Length: 330
Image 1 (cartoon, rainbow, N blue to C red):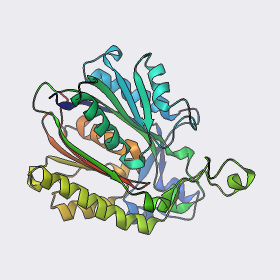
Image 2: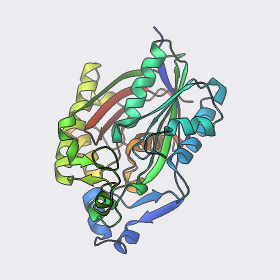
Image 3: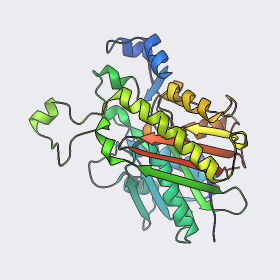
């Protein structure tokens, strides 16, 4: 059976930086409180005319280049996002394929919030191993600034914009995607939700006035569930594959909150050298956070070909996922 590899990683970060001190001028908060509660110091915000597909396309072009491929080699595009360019159609992946001047291939979006990139990785792995595809472009991209209520201090301090992309291809060596496990629990979906504008909360005057098109979160409840779920998923995938914590070269979790990451790291028994974070720079970029962090690690020389990586995510819905892979990029 064919094996799949993550052949490259890349990202795009918007230029504009929004600091905690900037937020102090917008809502009732302060730098010390934000850092203490979240670990976030800055986040990047896309321009008004810079959309999710634009950021995704820039990350995708670099990922294809780093994989030593051309756009003609790509035979599927999967974009994970909760902040698409359009409400229903076309999909953001369709727009990306247009931007890349690729036609005639399968392209679609998936909506799994912060776990989206791992969902995409799982699907791409299956497509490669089945022999259906050879090179699948996977992307996590978000313009969360467009669905955040900037007067709500409980959410606006958390999120940022950006995109990350990678190419999953047929493996030619042992640097393969070893295992991916994803899951969900719809019973707790109302704890982290964007109600409108869709079937239940259409774009009526009342729903617009009540800001139903913005992210709403029960922070304390989400925090507790996230820590336990991330811990369980990481532990289970390590045990399932007969590994120990010391075998992991790099632990790259979803970058939502430094307190969550630290709690999971300590429970897993991972050292600081094994754990990589970018939440302090970018905040929570949902589906983009893991590939953006992987790209930073790659560009800093922390992520190298053959490194054993543990990826771990938890997102609204609720969704979650964990993955083990040996990085295939050169």
